[in-house]
Length: 245
Image (cartoon, rainbow, N blue to C red):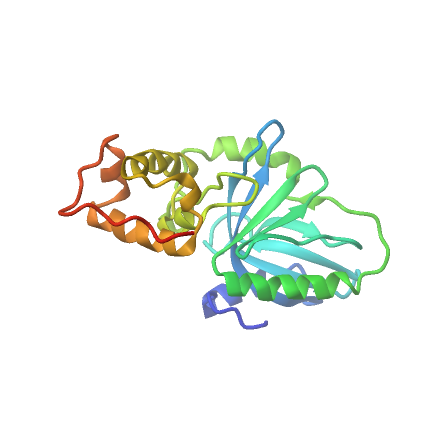
């Protein structure tokens, strides 16, 4: 299996064991979360699918797939699958966020590392260029089941016990939302709290500003501390304005 910096040896073993056949060759692997655009909603929704994203070549059937493998050790091994087809577009929206057109839904893949994402995308593009002409297939697990499964799992703990990173727009999460690992609801509340310091939402996608906000939040104790009041208590001295975007 190609090296993937964020995958442990146990993760790699789980990914390899999840493949249906020894003829399924793993071409690339990374850590990612799966988002989807649901009908009637103009924003990304988190599917609660998180794990090892792999690009696989099926030598027996002469096909290639993207798969998300469950690394938690319980439940289904393959959480999501999408077959590649001629003209398949693995589109970069941000350095860490790529979109994939399924049969019924638009999917988003939120990578844990931008460098890993770029390497994975390069492998996908190379594989797509080698595909023969074939009709566009649908994603499985199946795509149509995602809305109901999402509703059923709203009260479940998210993978690895971490907060779910949402996405405020079709472009994916902002730099600030990612660095603080916030879901959409908490992120929106933080935006309102930061307005008291003349920090606008438009500033929050700048990486330098995101680091400043992370430090500022730490000075105030936590994100929750800032959200609890519409007029957050100021630290010992007023914070400087964020660096220009």
